[in-house]
Length: 218
Length: 89
Picture 1 (cartoon, rainbow over the protein chains, first blue to last red):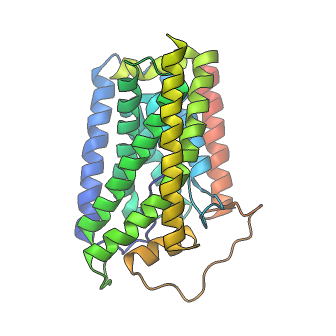
Picture 2 (cartoon, rainbow over the protein chains, first blue to last red):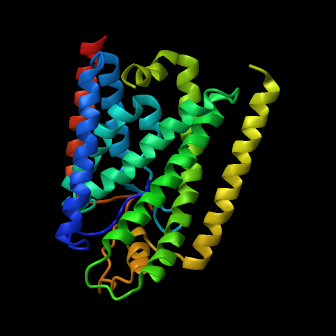
Picture 3 (tube, rainbow over the protein chains, first blue to last red):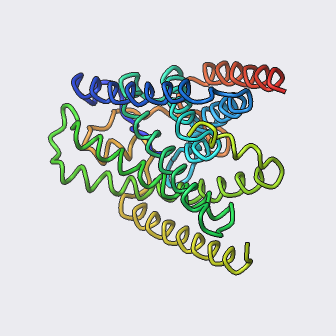
C-alpha cells in the first residue's frame, strides 16, 4: 500500500543503487532460506502465484478515495505466503508494475524494501497474535494495520534519507508533507485491514491448511 | 477459545480502525483533495506538471500505467496460476 510514487530521476543514482543493493541482498537471503529448508512445495507455489496475481491486479487500480489511493495486499501476502516467499512476490509485483509504467524502474529497489517491511511485520504480528485467543479476523486485521503503518514509516525514511533531486524544500517540510500523505494512506490501510481480516477468516474456515504454508519455510 | 476473548479482540481491532480512520480524515482535510501523484509532488515540493493526464476509468476507478500491458500481464499471470494449480493438485 505504501509506495514511492516518484518517477525515475527523483533519487540520485547513488541512492537508487543503494536501495537496489539492499533489496537484492534481502531477496537473496529469502531465496537462500527457501533452498536451505525443506524446499518449496507445490501448495506454496500455488499460493504464491495467486498472491502475486491478486496483488498485481489490485495494485494498479487507482481507488477514488481521498483523491486517489492504492491497495496492494502485501500483508495478505505475508500472512499466506510468509516472509520468505512474500519477499520474492513483492519484487515480482514491483517489476511488473514498473513494466506497465506504474512507478520508475529505479524505484523498484526502494519500493521492494517498503513492501517487504509490510510483508515481514504483518506476518510477524499475525504469528505473535497467534499466542493470544484473538479471532483470525482481528489478528489479520491488526497485523495488516501494523504492517502498513510500518511500511509508511519505511517509505518516509527512504525518501528522507535519499533526498529528492532538484527540490529546495527542507527535510522538515518533507517530513510534514510525507506524514500527511502517510496519514491519508492509513485510511486505506483501515479498509485493507478489514478486507484482509475477512479473507483470512474465510480461508481459515474453508481451507485452514492454506494458512500453514508459511510455517514450513520459516 | 473463549468467546469473551474473541469479542475483546474484535473491540480492540474496531477501536484501532476507527482511530486510524479519524487520523486519516484529519490528514486528508489538512492536505486537501488531490490525486496520489499530486499528493506526492506536493509533499516533496516537486513542481507540478503543466497538464495532468486525465483518465476516465469506471466510477472513478482507473488503471495506473498502460491498460493494454496491464491486461496482457494479468492474463499471463492468471494462466500461470491455472497451470500451477492444475499441476499441483
